[in-house]
Image (tube, rainbow, N blue to C red):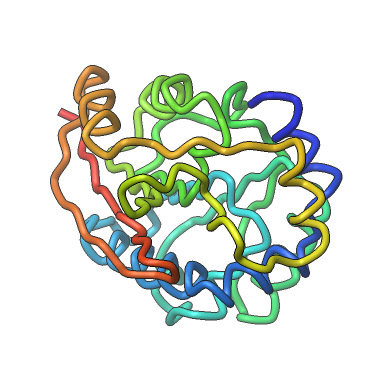
Length: 218
C-alpha cells in the first residue's frame, strides 16, 4: 500500500463517513449480499475458520442475516484501529463473537489454513498482485474476493462528480486506488494454484458492479 492510501485509511477517512458513502452508493448492501452468497457456496464445516481481511467497520453485518456466521470461528483484520472498535461493537450488537486484530495483509501475521478467506474491496487499495501472493500463501481452502468493476472509460474507484462525505473528499486529494481487472485476477490466482469456481455480479450506483469471485485451492 502506498503512503497516500495508508494515510487515508489509517488517519483520514472516518468510519462514519465511510459507512454513509458505502450505503448511499449501494456497495454496502451489495457487498453483504455477495458475502452471503460466498459463504453459502463454500460448503464450510461447522466450526470452520473464516478470516475476513480488510474487514473495516463490519458494515455488512447490518445488511445480511448474521446467523450465517454462527457456525464458524470468525477472525477479522484491518489496518485502522478505530474501524476495528466499531467492528467489535457491531459484532456484539448482533450477538456474535469474533477475534479482531490490527493487521496489514501485505505483511500479515494471520495463521495459515483458514477454511475461507474473504476480502471485499481490499485489493484495489494495495499492491494487488502482492495481495494475491500473500492470500495464497495463507493456504485457505476457499477464497472469496469481491472487486469493483466500472463502466468502460471510468478508471477512478469513486465516480467523478459524485458528492462524498468530507473525510473522503480530503483523502481523495492524495489517495488513489486502482481497479483490479477481473481476468488478470483470475490468472494471478491460477498462478498460485487456485481455480475460479464461481462468479457473481451485483449492480451498484453509477453503472458500476461488484463482482464476487470464488477460488478453490487445487
